[in-house]
Amino acid sequence: MNALARINWIARGGLAFMFAYHGLVPKLLWLSAGEQAMIRAHGIEQVQLFAILAGIGEIALALCILLAPRHRWPIAVAATALLGLLVDVALVSPGLLKEAFNPVSLNVAGLALCAVAWSAGRGNVRR
Image 1 (cartoon, rainbow, N blue to C red):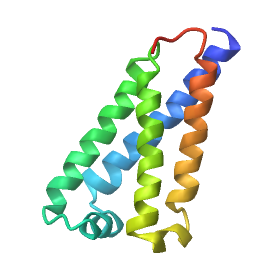
Image 2 (image 1 turned 90 degrees about the horizontal axis):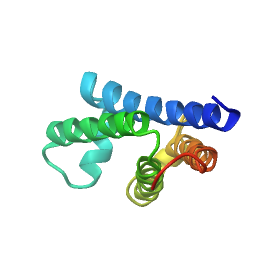
Image 3 (image 1 turned 180 degrees about the vertical axis):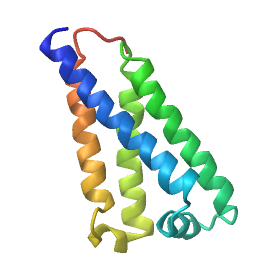
């Protein structure tokens, strides 16, 4: 495996871990108060159901990132989701942007991993 392929796998692994963890731990295993507050801020009444669906979606994206290594679309979906969720939090729950381990630091780091995976996989991936 050449250096770019290793870098691509490391970036994809980091992204997959990030999405899988955030789908599993604060949504499916222990629905966190923060997740509940963000869901309620959108006026969604079925908080538990929405959290379950969001968690499943995040885990599915993590699996796609890992199981479709020759395709770039999971990276594009991840980047779009990270950017969209960051804008969403800024508009709906701006107070979270100043908290420790906030969406700015997490999503910008995730976007950086997307950029690394996209760039490192350029020679051996399909759109």
